[in-house]
Length: 291
Image (cartoon, rainbow, N blue to C red; front, side, top):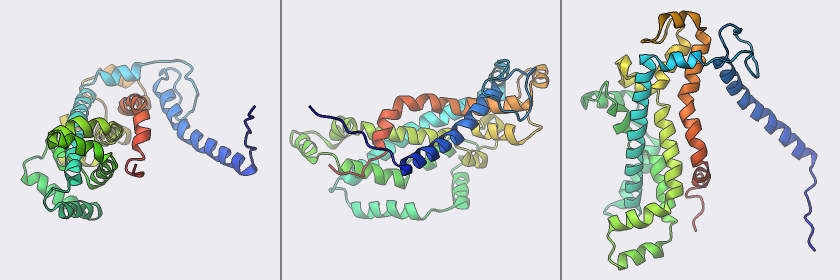
């Protein structure tokens, strides 16, 4: 008979648990405050007061935001940029990383060296702005997608992951007459599901939260992304939603409208993450262990 010996907790363990509990509480309380304020009815709303649960629930702030033209336009813009940007990011990152793993690629070391060089040195804001302007992409969604089709860090990590895949399977497929494209589609991609899931989340979150480039390249307010709209609502006290009922705008507290917009902006990522968490946990260690 075997007995399971439980580890005796030390003072160091208790201190660690206490500190982790404090950090967790510090991360959870802002979410509770945001949800509580956004769901509070205007008749019982008290500015800058914290409640675990509203005394009176209301979805008026969410109904007001979702009925506004500005929020709908921002949601469409962000969804377009996130979908096409993420798809193109995955395509270009994994195809280029696969090419860099092939020793037959001419000047492979020089190309990889340029990738590493771009990881350390970048052109800067002004050259990027001039490039987008010369390409005629100003005030276009593609100004936020095309310049960021891939990046050096993603290429290095994905290439390292592909180098760790069993080369015997790849060589066997090539000996059976499988082309490079066939190897990539039939072998590399199925074995790279954890990497694809992890970088899908990385790229999607990056595009969904895009702010600085949207401010710099999108001059038309109808093409603003969600983050730009939320920033305008939160920091500009005189701003309001266009296309909504003026009477509702006067009845609802501005604080509930702003916080409800913050919740709606982060809600899609919070809903998608649990479905990718299993693959994301595996993808965090991409390329760290070669086996």
